[in-house]
Image (cartoon, rainbow, N blue to C red; front, side, top):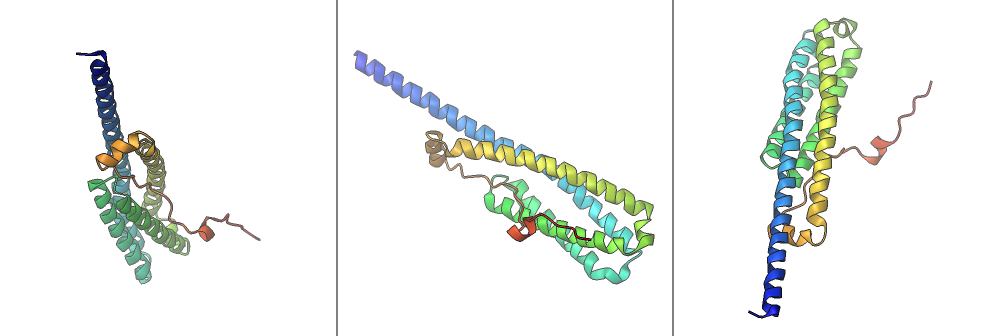
Length: 197
């Protein structure tokens, strides 16, 4: 065997080892996205389980605010369904986008419910409602931290899949960009709120 042939085999072996390493790195990062979503999912499930209790407690005092209560439950069910889709495919960008929209809707309906609660002093003073509200707030904070971790892992995966030369392996084996859980608020909603007295 000539030196050229040996050199050729060495180059091929190096390329194969590099390709296997790049593929395995992409798989590891894709799996990390699934793990990061699992952490979000735990907190979302906790939130989804708290919401019916919150609505039931509020229902005792504000039965005539039925539309608000029904909107909260409908938004919760929609968000739960969207989370189930992401659970099945955590790197699917469209499913992650749909979850972000559903979560934004849920947050809006919960904010409306809390605004209604403010108008009812006896409801606001209810111990069960206060405890549920505190637990919901704590859960929201946990969701925010888990969402940040998910986005960090998705960014690492997307960077790895889009950088040359790993993007060649990503394209060859169908590694698609992962979606990130971003706010769906409009530019107008993102502006700083100004309180005037």
